Image (tube, rainbow, N blue to C red; front, top):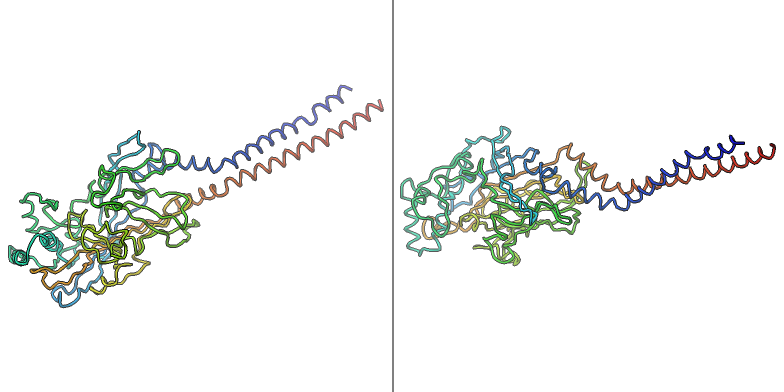
Length: 490
């Protein structure tokens, strides 16, 4: 009789334990399913925050992806026939440089949850280039064009004529064009007596820098001066994003422009807002352009299994023509062409304009004034392809063309038509590799299916708990019936 009672008490015990565990796991799975989105967002924000020790901060300090900076020059083949003939341009390049970039001199503002930094950049010529640094390029004489541009507003017709004679006849004389090696035009620079004179003169109101040589990137290699001082958000606070511009060169606005054009906002380059849609506007701040640019949706695609939304600079991104009144505060001078932007204000008042390469999306009149340009959206667009849920760039092509304004005067440029002369364009393209693509793909799977997985587990364990309880009930009933019979027989 004692043995029978023991069987009744002990036989289903382990099954009740299993049922209890399954019930606990089912409840836990349900809780995780309901809270998964919030939990995922919390973990993601902690990983992306720019705080010491976070993965995002370590990658941000020194990017590991290979970076290449490619430059294409326009060689002017018929300068001696100008202005009787349109300038004929032949594209040369790319002159490819391996770039090293690192964010240094990091300082923290804990009260505002921001950090400030400077960017160290260096370039090394890469042998895979389509050309040599010793290639000779003929282009517009930027120093002469800048001198004419500076003096023209302050001179009458006679003074313009005398100034042109001075440029032509003093020392080696100046012409409309210049012929130099690529290495001189870029990083090494070349001597010019106008620069020598400028060094001996007091710094004028135009803010012309005192440099001993001219080169488009002279004294910028191995320096901290390419982007200036930048202060961005850390993203450690809930609901905030990392890497959003707060101050540039210690100011909370762009001093070169007035009104809404002086706004300082958007991503500083490395961190993009999450949960983007086709209606989103991607706001970016570009130190090279000294301004904030709004990039709009272009089209969707897929790369390494990752869906992306491509945002780019369209026809209105640089438009300062009369048809785009919302950009009129960017003018600072001539504003008669669409698809270009005057950056003279932040380039020491030199007659510098930027556009997309080959005047893509720009006023057709600009291409009609020269020959040899062939705009192609596939080769010359500026875009960022973003994985929309995570806000991670999977394909980036940053492309900008530098142009110099030439306009007639009563001297050296007396017969020159008013035009924007294309000098060169550059690009920096980044495409995520297989390893990073696979990692992002797994994160997206977790984000998309994590809640469903937890809910599925909850249902499975609920079913097991019910099945175990039901089995225990059946076996208990059979045991009781058997015991009753044995008792009666006894």
